Length: 197
Image (tube, one colour):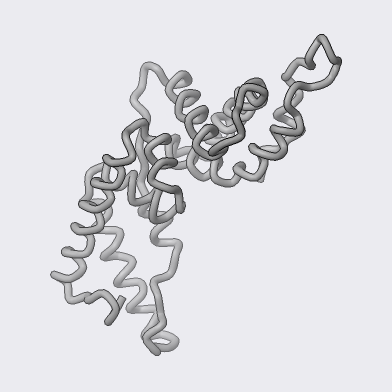
């Protein structure tokens, strides 16, 4: 991963009273384990890998400066809030692009636990992937966003809510509606949950 801890701490001033960096142990404990999630979410929000790295870098600098005020609870939610606010500050004039989960969905192969083998399974997987992609494109950007953050990236409802700046209940209702629409679309095309999915 291109975002490195050494690059983060270079611009942070040491505490003048003690001569040491404030919160460096807390930073390592709470922030470093969340780097992959931050980068994944930043890529979704920005749509550009380079811009995502810049966003994560700025988020890490802000987190480092604020780690001594962090209470130690829910580090991912804390970091995702910093990321969201940083993104908003960096893009005040343009509305953030929410995401297109199609590429991530297509990169995960469909389940093949039904005993099919080889070429048949690959063809059926590609057809299902194409149907999922079409279904995702048919969803609104808000619905695609929650599907990608919760179902693809594995964020909790609260974490997705923090990223999107909406209440967790809204995440849950959008996710329910999106899944229902995807399920109906697939069923209309002959797919049945647990049978051929």
